[in-house]
Length: 216
Image (cartoon, rainbow, N blue to C red; front, side):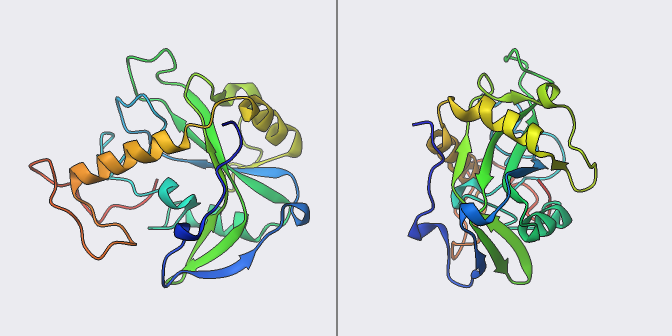
């Protein structure tokens, strides 16, 4: 399957307020870039659940809920601005590959996107949610292909750059389900409670990681 994976009823939890829902035809075609730390040594484009880069064990992007900022704030100004900007539709997820066994190691790639459909309020925190597509590093779009985002702080991409990224990713296989399985495996190892769980599970490693870290 090459298309984004659509939202389902299980993607939202009690206590999460849908502030606004969007239709694709009411949004512009621009994108917003959002960086996350890669779980070092992993072949898949998944967040750094296990603090392999020393920046904390990362809960975002929360691909399990097809969302960003769902569990904690991660570059919150970027997400709030993206949620409120009607000219922007695609949250383009990018990371720097940290796997010495891959040819792409050390390079930055757009590895997928969230197609904005909802602005959420979660205890005063703004999150965005929508159909999602994730691709392998082999199929990902190098940042060098489109250059840097047009504005550093808000990470906006103009329409031409956005379409170039989307075109590069369009024919690639969507490996979303494979990535979710890997994230859930890593989360189980650290025994971390998720927002939608009553409690965590016993960790599978001796020293659970710091729960207090935030960011992506």
